[in-house]
Image (tube, rainbow, N blue to C red; front, top):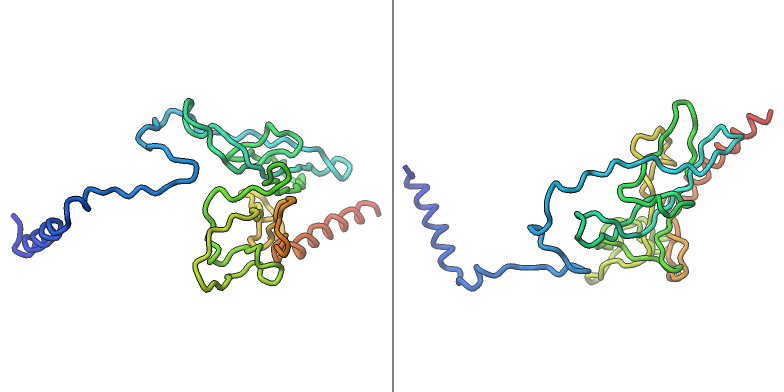
Length: 233
């Protein structure tokens, strides 16, 4: 049985609903999605097996064969993410720079051996015909972020705006983080150690690398040189 208090609340809610014109209550807001969208109820569920990432293709070895070497890039491509018969999805993903067929989302797994070093060179290859490709999702430039348009002085900052700016559609900053890797912070995807792709149409004045890029690049290079010197003695 409803209490008097519950009955009053129900009456207020019912009265509020009745006060809204029926035409407004029946309207449904549909946001426009770039490239179109699909009715989610039309996509069958649990019909496509989850991807088990295979091993990343090794580029070779260095240091006389004692270190496994990988050259891995990030590129834009399309992949069949939805069930067969539905359109392919445009994604960003990783793969071996020497094998275009290895690019996938999710990316492949680097299979390392205990007590054996792995060296990886990451390449931001988010380009098309030599020009950068825009982000796949909306980037809000009013937040603290990489901010390439700010140049070296304004990168990795929270820009100040006098009016609401449009979404950022410029070159995509990239820095890669590995899960399960035993590495120092300079090789772990530090947020302010990003790089832009080597694109032809990057506007003048854009910062090309993050504020920690140079510092974190020097550190592993020095470690490699030191290890070579030690072995040569």
